[in-house]
Length: 169
Image (tube, rainbow, N blue to C red; front, side, top):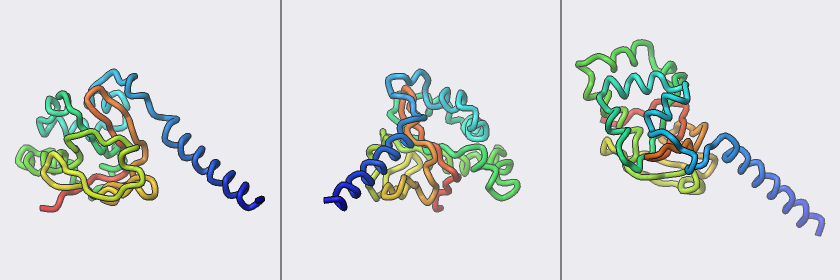
């Protein structure tokens, strides 16, 4: 009986810790006041992503009705790319490649964390590729870790990731 209570207590503690980790920093969907672009701008840690979205001409697309799921790399994720990569992608002659990379981070449907946790599989992207999702130990997408799930916007959800995803070409 003691083993059973100890195991139950341990499972309850793990569940409580997981719910605090996922729920504490996340705004409720009903509290979302801006679209995906406005939410990213307001967050302050996506200036490189926002600049790339502007250079690619995708602002209006990401302000559209949705629902959209965006796996959003932070400024630190872009900084981890090889030197000169971001600058090169922002050049007008590389716009098609930039659009391909950015739309690979966008799923044209709503995938909140609760739909991804405990799952493994692929979800389609706006680019035409398919992202590998592994929700068996936290959530990762194509090997990048979701560091902050469920940042809700009026037209979808943003999951913050720690790497820039590169589609196969």
